[in-house]
Length: 232
Image: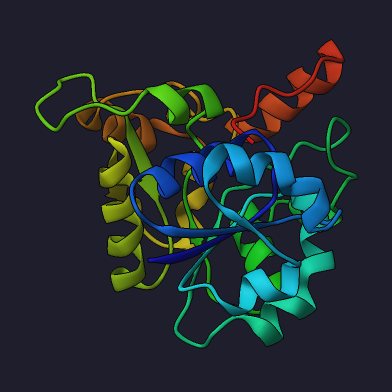
């Protein structure tokens, strides 16, 4: 599959390596241009490109940048992404630590719905609950009882199944977590976030989430004045 990844941080870089190793055609891009990605391209087997070029060639586009950087990509994604491409957002909003405050989210809008509004394209929310270290080395065989599960949210059932299949290739149990309106259940601070749970426990953790979990997480992170514990 032609997969493009926008963002070269821990999650984006790890996914580039893991996906290229499994035979996918991976293109990587960031805000600093292809020259800044030469080493990552050599290490992963991915191809470095300008952002617009990477977006235009994607069958599946993984956007792995800080939430606050998404509006800067909106026009390019809206106009250059192929009509049938799947867009996957991995971001986690961390105000005051990595992101500037976004009033709409602070006032209660689900993070993924805000992202979709910015990009003006349907999105799938995935890969945001698994840390980079687990993405790099946590994949397990199907029969392993400790295989890590990851929620996948969005409106398009077929697109979700494509992402779930991709997670399966990487050694994880992706599962349908409903639509974006309910994707707050996989935001930072919720029971499924960053906990590397197997499938049965992950489903229960998703159901156990309460709407204030993420607000409480943000407050704790800000109060402790330490970098947010985020898989991004």
